[in-house]
Image 1 (cartoon, one colour):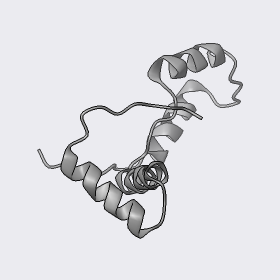
Image 2 (cartoon, helix red, strand yellow):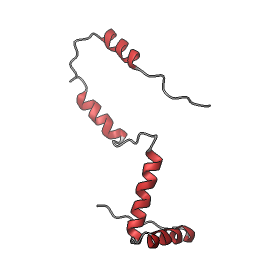
Image 3 (cartoon, one colour):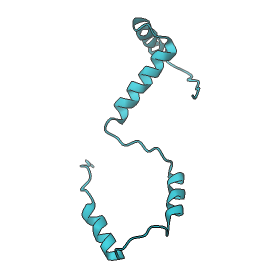
Image 4 (cartoon, one colour):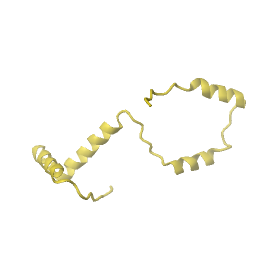
Length: 93
């Protein structure tokens, strides 16, 4: 497990967390962990969270480069990639 120190927590927030922990009969630490879990669930519900850094992804691609075997020619692969693409999401600019 990882330990962190959080500095400069506003007094009103820490008081609310203390009240919640008392109401739920949990330690302050347990209440903070639960709030973090709920916050992460809420924030990531409709998003994909990257679990691999871009530098790690590049190393993976470099290792795989030239290793992929495929019976299709380049034009067929490109056609398949384009045909499998989705339109994506709507973006308001």
